[in-house]
Image 1 (cartoon, rainbow, N blue to C red):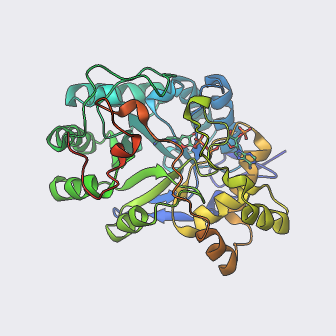
Image 2: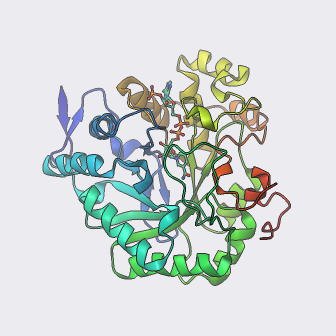
Length: 348
Ligand SMILES: NC(=O)c1ccc[n+]([C@@H]2O[C@H](COP(=O)([O-])OP(=O)(O)OC[C@H]3O[C@@H](n4cnc5c(N)ncnc54)[C@H](OP(=O)(O)O)[C@@H]3O)[C@@H](O)[C@H]2O)c1
C-alpha cells in the first residue's frame, strides 16, 4: 500500500513524510536530513541485502544514505538509486555521501576513486564526500585488529592537505557538493581549518550515549561543521574483532532502557532520538524494515524530555568502540595514540 508523494515517488502507507524529518543547515545553506541510513554491513550483511534496505528505507521516507567505497557495496546500492530515480524520486531529494579509502589518498588516486564511486552509485554528483580516515594506511577488509601495514604512516599534515586539495578539486569540478572529514581530532582539524580553501562541511565521528565526545562536538558546532554520528546505537553487531572486554552496551544501559520502556520503543530508538535532539546526524544501519522504520519514526515522534536529555548526558563513559588499531604506524603504540588524547597530534 503506497501513497504518492509530491514528485510521484510512492511512499509506503506506514512511512514517514520526508518533509517532517528534521534537517541540518550546512554552512553552504544546503539542507541535509538529520538522520541517514548507514550502509556498512559489518562483514555480515551482504551487498544485496543492503541494496534492498536502501530501496525499503527510501520507501518509508529515508532521504539520506551514508556510503563508502570500502563497504564494497556501492555498485549494488547504485542499482537501488537508479530504481528510485526511475520511479519518480528526484536526485535533489536525496542526500548521498561517499568516502575515499585510505589507500587512495594520493590526489590522482583520490579523484579516480571518487569517479568510480559515482559510476558505481550511478550518480553524477555526491552531496558529500569524506576522507574516511586521516591515516593513509591500507589494510584489507576484514583485517584483524592485530594486523599492521608495513608501510603504515602517521598523520602528516602536509600530505593530508595534498589529499584535501584533491577533495577541493572535486567541488570545483561539480562532482561533489560538500567535502568533509571523518575520524578526526581537534588538533588535526585546527590545522585543516587553518590551511583549507574549502572548509569541511561535516565531520563523521563515533557518537552514542556511552561515547559523546563533547569537546569535539562543541568544537565542530563552534566552527560551523555539522557532526555526523556513526555507530549511533553502539554498533551492537560490529565485527567481533572490533570488540574488547571493556566495551559497554548503550542499548542495555538502565537509563536508556527505562526511557525506552516509558515510550514503548526499542532502546535503539532512544539512542537515535537523543542523537537528533542533541544536534548530530545519526546514520543507523539496519536491513530490518521494522528497525529502520522505527528509527526514522523516532526522528519525528514526541521528543525526549529535558530530564531525559540530561540523564543521557550523564551516561557518557568516553568508551570508544571503533578504536582503529590497524592504523597504528609503529610498534609499542596504543590505539589512544591515534586520537591525540593529550591535545596534540601524536608525534611521528
Ligand atoms: N566513518 C566511519 O569511519 C564509520 C565507522 C563505522 C560506521 N560508519 C557508518 O555508520 C553506520 C552505522 O554504524 P554501525 O553500523 O557501526 O552501527 P549502529 O548503527 O550503531 O548499529 C547497527 C546495528 O543496530 C541494529 N539496529 C538498528 N536499528 C535497530 C532498532 N530500531 N532496534 C534494534 N536493533 C537495531 C541493527 O541490526 P538489524 O540490521 O538487525 O536491524 C545493526 O546491527 C555504518 O553502517 C556506516 O555507514 C562510519
